[in-house]
Length: 89
Image 1 (cartoon, one colour):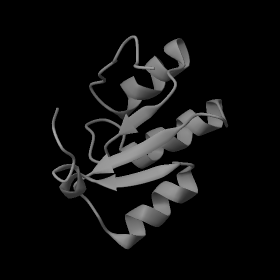
Image 2 (image 1 turned 90 degrees about the horizontal axis):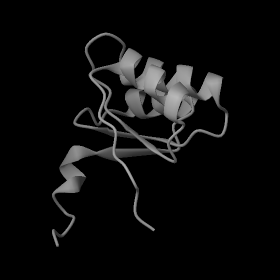
Image 3 (image 1 turned 90 degrees about the vertical axis):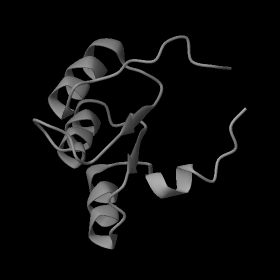
Image 4 (image 1 turned 30 degrees about the vertical axis):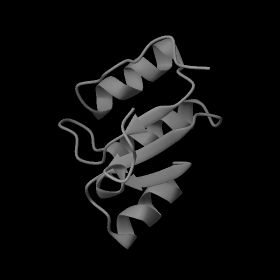
């Protein structure tokens, strides 16, 4: 099944607010965000809902960031460079 709706956020704080209001099935989260970085936003979302599924999608592919994302509760980490491997349809 496909998502009924895709919600876009302006920053990490916005992502947390929208998650609390909408409780989406999955969150695609960047690390570099304006007001609150994606690691902290992930931590706040998971603190609010331990079952939240957050996948970090970022151009920052460093081992320490992967560990930070895991500690924050992200269920996945996808470097944006890997996205070019996906076939378009």
